[in-house]
Amino acid sequence: MTTYTTFIPSDKAPFRFTASVGGETLFITVLFNLYSNRYFIQATDGNNSVVLFVPMIASPPDSDINLALPFAPGSLIYRESTNNFEAT
Image 1 (tube, rainbow, N blue to C red):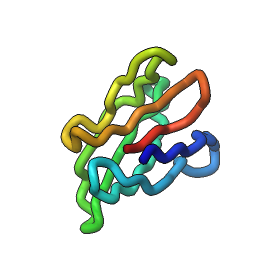
Image 2: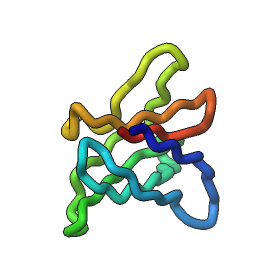
Image 3: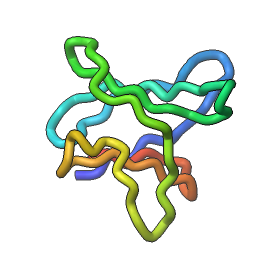
Image 4: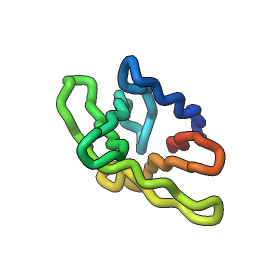
């Protein structure tokens, strides 16, 4: 089952949401880096250990770029055309 989460960036605090990816519950934080002028995704597990830290790369409408490869076959995708994260 795919879960959709709308990305709502803010200059007050990092965007956060919880997603189930490949059967694992991940706590996702989207951070903005001023130096590189881009977003990064940090995922932590239930023990508050960082399990993933990757640049946020948008997937085009016709293909998927899995941002959570260590949790394959689960996936975390950011779709810029809809401004949604898709977690399976």
